Length: 192
Image (cartoon, rainbow, N blue to C red; front, side):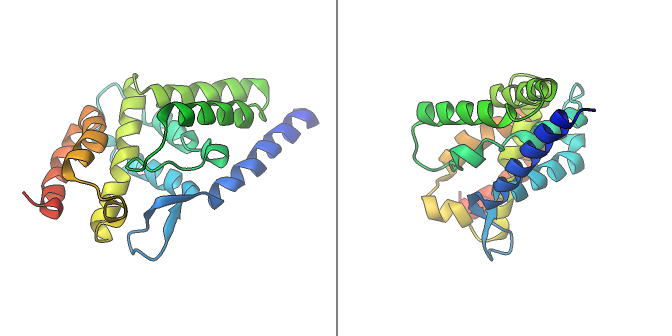
């Protein structure tokens, strides 16, 4: 192992520390404060580990965990864009791609390529691993909002129809049993 390799790895790890300072629109379950993106990444990894039995038979949990660990790293440069917020998707995608180039580019070439490929796979949400990872990422905040009395749903005036389109569709695709469990709870919150 060369000093240059370690220098690059530590530079990436130091830069990744900044994810702890990126605040999200979602609140903690106890409603005491907003969650940061590093906490979110950890929490969705725990969701994927605990809820692995909700994944399809072709899903490799180890890959899902790696995707979820990296999925929001671009928010260091691009910021968090709440799923129910108003933003230009094309502009956001360009900012996230530039952030991925810069951040993964800090790593040694082999790790940069491997981690970027995992990030790209998550973003595309086409493989069984990425579909499940995306569904777990989408379900964490609604469960938190149910626990804290509505959280970001109230802040953004979210309707059940919006939630079903933006969250229900990907969760049904990757973890239909989880959506079936969550749906009556959501209907109870939003009403008939």
